[in-house]
Length: 433
Image: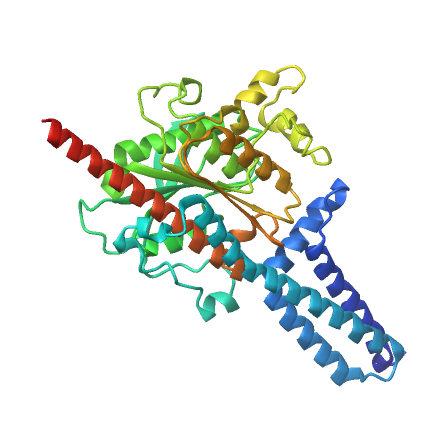
């Protein structure tokens, strides 16, 4: 068969494969677990790189048309399929831009229409910053020249492991100058992941705009068993309390954040300040935090509402993480669940979840927010992002830019409120003295 005769068939095959990626990004598999894992990666890469998919599909179409023309029906069918795929990708791009409105609505509803006045003046300059053209074209975390990164500081030794963290801070930070602190906890199903491969867009943005961001590792399953993970996160908070000033981190103001398993650990740490079962050997240390921003987290190890009924969450927890059966050790699973620790004095929360999350159903975020709002006296913000998949903010995508801008506004407002509270305390003591 001549090569030119096979071009229309190849054109059709490529168009169908491309359309399947687009279709999966719009409606990812969530029920049949063997398809969920592969479907997640395909949906994630398509959804956050939709512009790139649009360009390469258009380029491929042009190449095929140039090589084989449109005389045969497979080529005509391929052109129709590609056109439908482009329409789907354009819809994904529209959903990505909607993240800006979703975040802004959450901020105004949770903090008030004039919330920006709460943000200290020095932290307002970068609020409108957007990704550069280079970042859009090459969507990998690029080190920001305005940021100084101090890597692999040992903050704890546990179970024969040297636990390490990185500090990202504004370049040129004056000695003895303290900046508000954000602690980032990576995800990975409590079994994989590292500070080295997650949280870079967040750390770069906040550190470039005046914050100190600490990214910490923790012990992973199956080698280690819960609660080792949360103990290590609390150890990172302890390190900030005891050594943060040496690196410009204000030890008195810490907001904790993380995604997926990191979202679970961040929320659990925020809701269990000074819980001795989660900080053995350093019970005297204040492990409270001043705010929490969990991304697409797991908040209930017991799955009380059967939100994870079609997933492998409980089997993974039983076999690799907790290493006990839920039916035989329910209290252990309960104690590991942020939902079991919602409290009136919880710090401000901003819960963020993608509408199309394949791995942690969006119902998990909704239920957690509902329970928090019933008890907490602090603001509880919630942003449900149209079209967003799990781990969406790994890439500096259009959606990621809008979401991180909203997160920066939130932590800035929380910091401003905290500063105002400290000033009132000083004035009260001065008046009483």
